Each structure stands twice: as structure tokens, then as C-alpha cells.
Length: 444
Image (cartoon, rainbow, N blue to C red):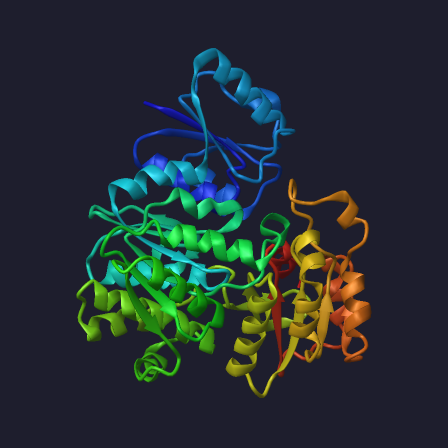
């Protein structure tokens, strides 16, 4: 039996690769800095997870070492891995490189874009499963229909993958069909500017083979700009567009259970893929009708709070300005007559610094907003920036627009803050962020 060790196994993508290898008969071990819902679920299915990361964790009798791209050269386990590599000549790969080999072998349907990837990939996966296409799926979130996991093993030649643009990671994949949901400013710590973001998306799409298919969001100005560039360079790529103005959007609105026009847009993209795959319209719509949403993507939960009794909360992974706007719009569309308390934990100091003005635009008309301190991302922060940005800066700027905004540094103190303000009969809590803010549920 071959053995793999994954450094940073608690990442959503790395955990999916762990499940993939386990399914292929590998023995899988790994480590992370702290326990999480993801690491606990991995242990339940037979993955040995070591917490915290230490040099001695890395076994010598390993055939492959995989790392999360967030792992830097300073990481003690990576240093140990490099020592073992010199002795045994084993490979050390990012988890995306492992999936590169899979995408070369299979008919790959890749979902990319600066927002909407996880939900669209989830919808696509469910549609293909429900219509008996039996795909293998790697998703950047957990799907309820798959038993709250982000991986599914299929027997067909179809491979569905969420293709993340950060650090050009999606350039590892070899797509046959690409869904492009959006292009906006994000990950500026790596890309620096929108031009470089465009360039990376273009490189990825140009990897499509002759007669490959690009499915584009016509409602995005930036997507359309790139689609026009692709059209000029590659006449052999078939480009299909979708828009909320399409007549098909009315059919989708009737069957879709999850709220928000952004979700109708995501479903439209999947609808177009279904047509490309030759599926019947009634079967596509039926599969979309059973979609229940995904983990931390407008994830509606009714909980029994120790402080407030039975209440409704919504978890959302929103962490860039466009996602934040979409999540807020969705919650007001779903509950137009409720008071919404919005708890937002910005993710990464560099992102907050580079997109500061965009966050102000996204949040300036919001009331009942609680900002918690920025979630620091290990290995992705720069001291000279971190010293000059915090959620307090957002709070001070947003105070000019509304007096219904508060700064509560530690999210664990939010229940105490809400104690005399929250009305369980008329109020909803939206919990937003890509860090550990989802843990707030435990303290409510």
C-alpha cells in the first residue's frame, strides 16, 4: 500500500485530495496547526491527522508528500520533507498538482471565477449525479447531498473540479469545459492588479482543446471582455453565454430552493452545461430543484441557542466585496420583513488593505453591522501591511455613513453584545467570512 503525507491537510482542497487518495487505496496521513471540523471528519474516515505541526510528524516511509500552497519554506514539516526527499528521491507536490494528473486522464469540467465557484461546482456535481453521469467531483466546500463532504468518487470518465485562481493554481488543470462565473479584483497580494488576474484567466481558458467549450456569464462586464479576447485568439473554442435576462432564468427561479439572483445566475451556468452534455431540460431542472445549498455558502440553520433560544442564522463564506454584497442581498431577498444582524469577519489583512475602498462601497448602506477583527492567514500576511490595517479602520470609515455599526474585536463576545438587542421573533443573524467566524455558532 502506498503512503501519502499531507502538510496542511485541514485546508478544504487538501482534504478533498486526502479523500481521493484514500479511495484509491492509499494510506493517508497529514497534519495541521489546529483541529477543525475538517480534520475531525478526516479522522472519522481513517486519515491519521497530527496536531500541531512538528518536524518529527513527517514519516520516512512515505511515497508522496503533498502540501497546501499556503505552506512556506519556513514550515518545519516542509523542511523535514525536503530532507527525506534528498534521501529517498520522493516527490513533493502541491495538492493541485496531484489533481493535474486526474484532469489529464478524464473529461474535465472546471468551474472558475473570483466568486460563485463553490456553489456552481456543487450544482454541477449534483446535476451530473442525478442524471446518472457518475462524475468524480472535487469541490471547495462540503455538499449536503454528498453527506457533507467535498469529494465524490465516480466510475465514469467525467471529472468536475472547482478551479481556484489563487497563485495560478488552476493552471495545473486540463479542462474540456470551462464555466467562467466572474472576474473581479481579489488576491491582490499575489496578482497585484486586475490586468494580471485577466492574464491568468486567459491562460487557463486557452488550455481548452480544439472544440472545447467556454460558458460565460454575460452579466459580467469583465467576463465579456475576456470572452471577446478568447474569441479573437481561438476560433476553435465554442463560447456559450448565460444571463439573468435569459428566458431560462424564469424556469430556474421557479424550481430553485436557494435564494438570491446570484444563485439563479450560477444555476443558469449549470443549465447551459447540461445542454452541452445532451441532457433533457426537465432532468436538468429537476436536479437543480433538489439543490439544498452548501456548507458556508448561504447555509441557513435553525439552531437552539443557549443565549437566545430557537433562532435562524445564515453562514456565508463571503470574503471579498462582491461576495459580501451578494450574501447581504440574498438575505434581504429571503427575509424582507426581518431585521438582519450582520456579523462580518474580514479575511486576510492584505485583502482588506488592497480592497479597502471596495469593502466600504459594499458595506456603507448596511445597518446592524458588527465587525470583528480581521482573520490572519498564516503565510499570507506581510508585516508592513498588517501593522497598518485592522477592522477598526473599516469601522471608523463606515461610521460616517451609519450609526448602526459596531466593532467587537473578538467574535466570542458577539453574543454578549447582542444580549439586550436581539429579538428572536423578528431577527436573523448573517455570519460572514472565510476564517473561523463560523465558530460563532457555538457561542450564540
